[in-house]
Image (cartoon, rainbow, N blue to C red):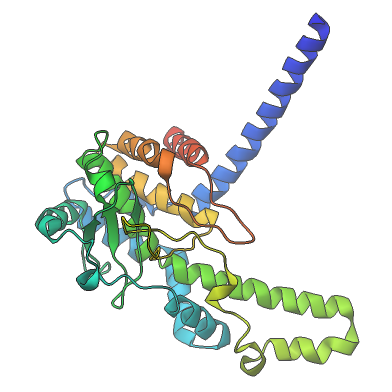
Length: 309
């Protein structure tokens, strides 16, 4: 029996070691691809607007997305159309927005360094007992929304809120929802092409048509995705707005929020923020990929903290 127990312990240790190694490889890849530019990390702690301006200006992924979307071709138009169909947040018509807390919200945004020229947005507080935050689209761009359940949570403080706001600002400013739809459109086109090749020459013409605007016009729609709706109401009514992020985008937002707070000597506050959100965090899923768990996100931030600049 002792030998069996020992063997089981050894096997468990081997499996856990392999999982840890795989996680480290994944985390390192995400860090190398999505980290904030060194010059942004080096921005002094008393210049948060400078951090955002430098980070966004130096981000190659965002620059590539903006260049591609500006082309206005088939896939780009489809991604924009899908993003346009997403539910919008209209604070002026939302009865749950706490207008009495707006001066406080504007002041808090100012301490985070938002808004600035490259991130035209605003922070709102809505009545909801759940501790949640999200970055819904608006007609002008995006907003950052936090709930009273978060703001008044006994474990919450200004540093935690700054970290949470930074993560949501990253989602919005990096155009993650548009990027998601654009990546999905490109993936579907690749699948069409390779599917046609696999079938053979008889459908080669169909494959060619799949790459044209006329054939592709109605293929890519927002409704193709199952999403988690974020309920900003307290009466259990219609849940809105909606967001859809890939796992990498969630990790990237965590990374940028951590870098923002790390500059202020408050990096650990973002880990506390994730722990606070853990019991009732709102995520989003597609049919292809699930959101990373809070524990995985904390492991990622701990990995980032362990790396030398």
